[in-house]
Image (tube, one colour):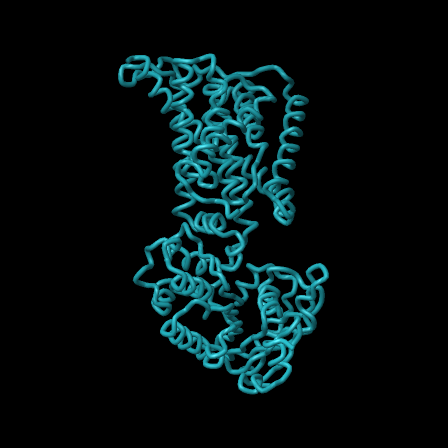
Length: 237
Length: 293
């Protein structure tokens, strides 16, 4: 395996219980640099839990998460960010009392790579014109972009994108598709959790479908649509 | 008219000082969402520090400022790691913080009785020089002016820290969204520990001047100071350290007006203000929303 194709992220046999609920039940996958992997599944299938586990929001019951070959299970969130793992949130919560520029600057300063220029990040995410506005005054799609900008300001090698398409109009979705593909072209690996199948189809290279914390399917999206297990999981018995 | 002018000017000096009394409590609440009920006890310890530096070494209380800022910052850092991270992991850290810090307050008070005794202590106001100062035709003790100036400087420094420094920006990020701050690479515990240390150091700084503004130093003074501080930060807006300046000014003015015109009722002031503001404007006058539920 050449260095370029070595996975930047490997998750292996992850298990996480919340009380009696099995949120993750043996899920495994890997992502190579520059690859966009989609993570799909019905509500409650464990997609966001998976992202939370990778970013260190909570610990695992068992399993291994390796980033660039190093096991990171016990690292706190901020250390994972500094290694190069970051995420955008399903419901973005920017620092409302700080300006757009301050939001990105904080991430740039503390995220581990001071060389990322906040102005450049704001330029590529289309937020430069509103950089002095308070984050609390932005609409929801602008807050999503700010969430993405803040993640990019930490210079991630792996970006976990949680439901970023939700609430965006078709034009905004098309722009977001281009932005995510451009990030992958720079070598950033992306894990995209999404309910919008059309968006997922346009963005991802391959997908993993989860159900009840397990992998149900791995491959191309069009193949998943033909798989009876996937159809049953989404539509019910 | 002279009486009113005197009360208003004195209220300004007291207000600036009381802003310093409350700002540490508000910084800690803003960053950690916990109520430090031992706040007044740290102020009391700061007051004893200034007292002993004066009586044992003959040092002017102004020399106690740098010493106590460093000492109490250094006390705050390990105390944060000892108490707060575990508190944050609980289901209801705000509620549990009441119990934990009330316990800490009792321990500090008991230790203070043991070490310092129950005797009341004071530092003579003449330590800052002789003649009172004439302002707008009214005469005020130098100690009031010095206390107000230190209060204003303290608030100014905390403002500069929050708005013009890197850790200050991170502190504001944690105040806005504690959970997401970690997602930008901020070490939430390290920055919070610093804020905790600053909060306690600010209380100690206010303590240095308490003999001139509040009264005699004694181990049991902490709880009353904590109540006053709580009233001040609720008025100015919980979780907004700079709003404490407004809260302090309102409290100072109200206190001086009460002491001038209704002296026998002035002890009730913090409680009355607290009840009024909670009934009329529970988010405080600056209306910064700090609670999601």
